[in-house]
Length: 77
Image 1 (cartoon, rainbow, N blue to C red):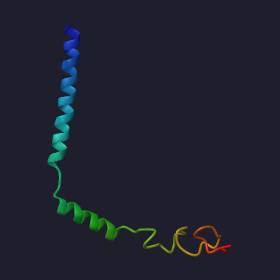
Image 2 (tube, one colour; image 1 turned 45 degrees about the horizontal axis):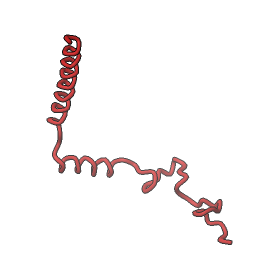
Image 3 (cartoon, rainbow, N blue to C red; image 1 turned 90 degrees about the vertical axis):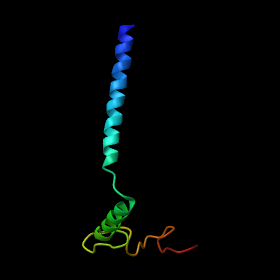
Image 4 (spheres, helix red, strand yellow; image 1 turned 90 degrees about the horizontal axis):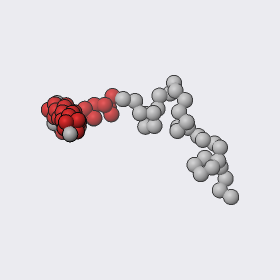
């Protein structure tokens, strides 16, 4: 019986520690407005290969596909 109590106690202590860490990390949360500003800054300062292609890097999503298929400018027989 003592082993079972020790096991349960150990499980509760581990869960308590996990919850303590979760609580601590939630204290570092930032305001939504600050998070939105961070997202806007990231989007404005990070190159997007689809919407703002870098001409020095070949990007298969830009230019003339030329190979036919559904999107490729082939014939529509």
